[in-house]
Length: 436
Image (cartoon, rainbow, N blue to C red):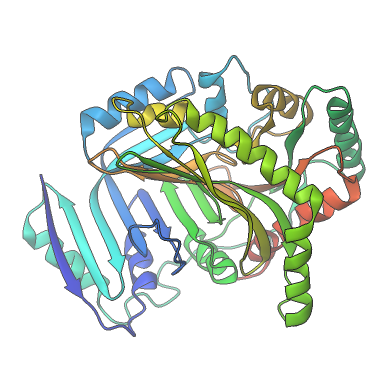
């Protein structure tokens, strides 16, 4: 049983900073922040869930069956992630590339404490706790000045990132990918590369705040599971379920911003909108998403409501489409994830062939990168992002990395694809290499 309370706060109070600071004391933390983006689908401005009452952690073997049992048995809010390597549970695939991060392949937890933020109102939702603890927490959160920097000192060191593969090796691998396309093995594949640093010591909370300040994405996420951290500036929704309505918003197509030259910036957005390569990338993935959703949708209900629309974010312009469907009666919520995972924008088409070739050519196991983070509510509705533009950190081993990628098609020029990767990497690299 949960108890809840709503409370107003001064609109000038830095509530998000206060909530994240208060969350430091817990080993399980998820912070979801829309950064005030209005998309017509979100249920709140921000949400914080902490302190596991129950949890599930497993590898890819029968992962979706285990998640289904946990979600239906709990019948409560649960928060967690699906790593890209759950593809091995969905299809006869393998992940043989090396993993330096060692995140569990699936992790969800039922939080004792959930706090949602809408406008200048907090709603606290606590599991099986007395009012005294709720009031004590509320007082801690709203204490002005208690979250000044330096209260949680961390010994930091200089971080210098290295690419997992050289620029020359990247070009060769893209050429090999193009060979697969010319032979008809695939039409498109998302090819990714990793940047990493060892012996990295930093404060994940401060780095997340810096990343979010730079990017202000609609699906920002801070996730902690003990020593494993995700700092995400994702702009992409993987899949949302509200009642019988399903919504997926794949991104394919990226262009840089020119923030200090409005005319040039507008021109870059227009070039992206008209670019035949970028449009074809997006349309191919839209077709893949339509096909995935049709596996659990009512017949004839899958529709594209937005095709190749350009949205502008702090760092980049993005081409986004919206695909909707109505869920067939009697289909479990987790089944929708199973039949659409991983997100088509992170694989390619045809999906299975693309994933096989990705595994062959990439050097690093993707893990949580290009997986998904989100939540289920007690009614079985859910919302998940795509884990891109994200920093992954194993605090115990002091290993930090991020990966970036681009869609390789028959029109791809290796040098251009490499430059697109660098555009996507810029904010992540800046945040990690700059001193707090």
